[in-house]
Image (cartoon, helix red, strand yellow):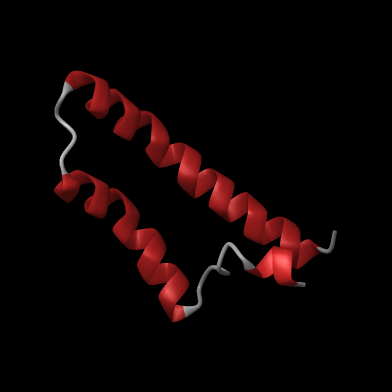
Length: 62
């Protein structure tokens, strides 16, 4: 696996795991709303859209 693929996988794993714990906690507390989900995922989606971080399907297609 080349360095770009490793970087893409690392960025997405970090992004997903860093938001999964707070989202899971709020879900089990009954406080999870669509606004919170959007607020957590918004930076990742924007950074992917403008090309700062690679899309998650890039390592698979290479």
